[in-house]
Amino acid sequence: MVEKLPGLSYGAFAENIVTEGIDWTRVPIGRKARFGADAILQVTQHGKVCHAPCAIFAATGECIMPAEGTFFAVRCGGKLAAGDPVHLDPDLERIRFAVITVSDRSAAGAREDRSGPLLSDLVEKRLDAALVDRRVLPDDRETIAAALMELCDERAVDLVLTSGGTGLAPRDVTPEATMGVIDRPIPGMAEAMRAAGLAHTPHAMLSRGICGQRGYSLIVNLSGSPAAVREQFEAVLPALPHAISVTSGLPQDCARTRERK
Image 1 (tube, helix red, strand yellow):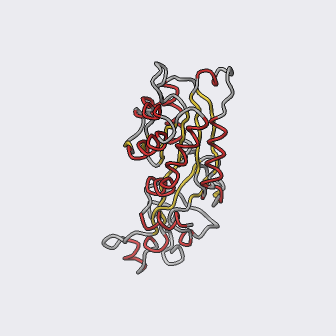
Image 2 (cartoon, rainbow, N blue to C red):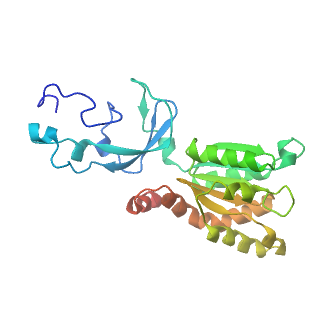
Image 3 (tube, rainbow, N blue to C red):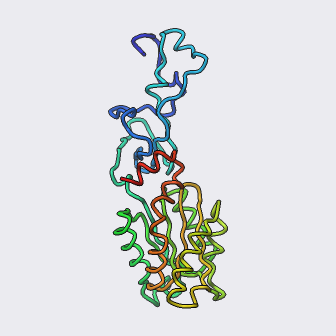
């Protein structure tokens, strides 16, 4: 286009980022890329209709936007500068997840956290997922809510699983913290976990854990014991890949293709 219209420069198409070395037209919708050190972007659309036509089309007889323009959703923000690298990072194609163990005693070092490592291992093996973060927090509503928002909004995780704090004790506040940050609840998943637990103990009906969506992320509350963690995870596992794909916000045809892979 520069050869056809001397004087044309970057910005003529109102592009936000100009890259070299990657043919984005060959990168499928849904693929994630790392821009600079921190930012994660996801391809959402290739091209758009040239409007009316534009001044560049009038001058040259063609417009690059329908064929060359690529659009992204920002999954994780960051600062960019001219010359920063762009990577089609294979690790970003895996489900990215985080695990939070909620326990005053474990956070204080008075009790070993057994549920968090077990849950991390289950997700890594059963979903072939990549662990982004694992942490142990006290039973504090604001602390839990802040961690959930950070992991969803800043760390671009697809799935956050919490363990603990879902019972009837006065300091069990994980459901309240979760309800305060999700955009929409997913009651069926929580009901499935409780139903699975009832096959082993009537106390399962006392679990108040919830599941929901925050932005492009899925949040699932599980109970605190290792046995309950295993039972509840197995209960929702069949639906998790599809739930994560749909929550990603990608077109459904694309989401189904990625799920089959």
